[in-house]
Amino acid sequence: MSPQGNPLSEGLQLRRRPEPCALVIFGASGDLTKRKLLPALYALAYRKLLPDRFAVVGVARTPQSSKAFTAAMKKAVKEFARDPFRQDVWDQLAAGMRYVSTDFSDDAGEDTVGRVLEELDAERGTGGNRLYYLAVPPQAFETVVQEIGERRAREVWVRLIVEKPFGHDLASARKLNELLHHWFGEDEIFRIDHYLGKETVQNMLALRFANGIFEPIWNRQFIDHVQITVAESIGIEGRAGFYESAGAIRDIFQNHLLQLLALTAMEPPIDFNADSVRNEKVKVLKSMHTPGPKSVVRGQYGAGFVEGVEVPAYREEPGVAPDSLTETYIAAKLYVDNWRWADTPFYVRAGKRLARRETTIAIQFQRAPHPPFEAIAGDGLRPNVLLIYVQPDEGVSLAIGAKVPGAGMTIRTVHMDFLYGGAFRTGLPEAYERLILDAMLGDATLFTREDEVEEQWKLVDAIVGGWQRERPSFPDYESGTWGPKSADDLIHRDGRSWRRH
Ligand SMILES: NC(=O)C1=CN([C@@H]2O[C@H](COP(=O)(O)OP(=O)(O)OC[C@H]3O[C@@H](n4cnc5c(N)ncnc54)[C@H](OP(=O)(O)O)[C@@H]3O)[C@@H](O)[C@H]2O)C=CC1
Ligand SMILES: O=C1O[C@H](COP(=O)(O)O)[C@@H](O)[C@H](O)[C@H]1O
Image 1 (cartoon, helix red, strand yellow):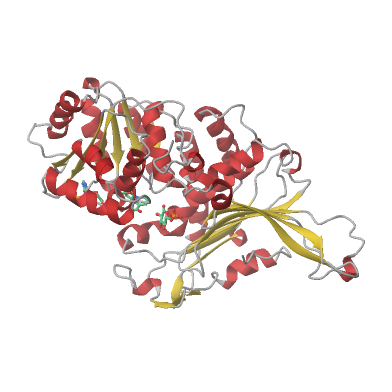
Image 2 (cartoon, rainbow, N blue to C red; image 1 turned 60 degrees about the vertical axis):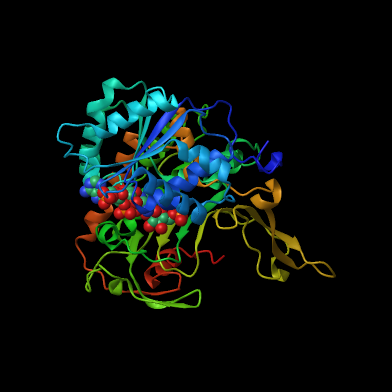
């Protein structure tokens, strides 16, 4: 029973409990730890999903005591956790919390992190099991992996969660994979893409494979095209250092967008285990051919108003070059060349400072073949669309034509809706809750495999290679709009339009 006593609000449910372990967060003084990781751990503690014998070790260069770190994390939990603050839940979590200040390489031969972990094994019974979380910038990955790898033989099980970005291109991703595999087996490496931890993203699998009605029509014969939108109203939130070298293609397209596409397009896996699911996703990525230059557009936001607030242009953000050519928007028409999807376009787009925050997958079906009442249709007879709302307002909606009551035969589009909040009366678990828990359980189904990440980069490298031949004219869209005109042109050329939700 959940702490609120409502069995429908259980959210995450466990068939088995994770074994005792210590979670070691490298990068514990950073933004991700504060805003996402500690609130997720608190949510797991709140639902009694953590092992009884559990510890958290924060590691970073910033000097501070364990006491100060624990106090900072308590503040973060109060500010960012989705559950009300409960002192008893916090006390239990905080009792196993430690902080180690180190620059990871200059320990003068002393393995401080290792010593603290051994103390915790004795005090908290964590049993020599370690879950390491790499929440450091990419330039620190190598040193930290080396540090963890060298200690490996003294530990029972070791798992390693690696944050994005996983490389900058195919070559660097391969190098990083080699480094990780020098010390760890693939089954010990958990490359995180937090979109896979979102309930609604997993619901795509439930919708497709737990319902008999969709699978027969989930193909080129019935589907006209697919649209995937990852729209953000926020800008780069002070992350210019990272974003200037990443842009929308590496920040969102390479990972989140391609994952959403792969889940939409994949064949049914034989079961829901890590390799079965990931094998099918890799097949999709391998079937995608490089889009031609006219099938990919990029954009950069200028100044404007987002949700009534005036915001600066990308080039005016602190840390961004005044003549930056980094894209903050990308749209593409992609094809999955296989029997199921040949000639069915997947239009995808992602951007910052757009009109609204919204992530949606829209499956647009073919028009009805012979509408006998088209001449008197109210708003034109529109094709059916299945909408998967990933966020916000999580749910699924089917657009169908229905008769307007009264005389005549006027047809209007209406929606059959399933909304998570209404159906399950529950706040959805945050993606990081699910993913940390899965890693503790050793379940890699919702993490990206080596070959998957390399296929993603092959596509990105091909697109970026094409971009090098032309100089974009930026900025080309106003903040608070739906992106550059070139993105509209991309889809209008095919006689279609982006959905305005
Ligand atoms: N923040 C977010 O929402 C998201 C972040 N990520 C990824 O998570 C990782 C961390 O991001 P975030 O927390 O935002 O970054 P921050 O810059 O806020 O924090 C980085 C952390 O790493 C430590 N660190 C920085 N430089 C080094 C270095 N050279 N050697 C060792 N440690 C270093 C810092 O601590 P100190 O200076 O004390 O050593 C700090 O604890 C990045 O890979 C990022 O791409 C991914 C998705 C979302
Ligand atoms: O990985 C990232 O994701 C966030 C968007 O995540 P969401 O869960 O809020 O949709 C994005 O803002 C950030 O730039 C990117 O690095």
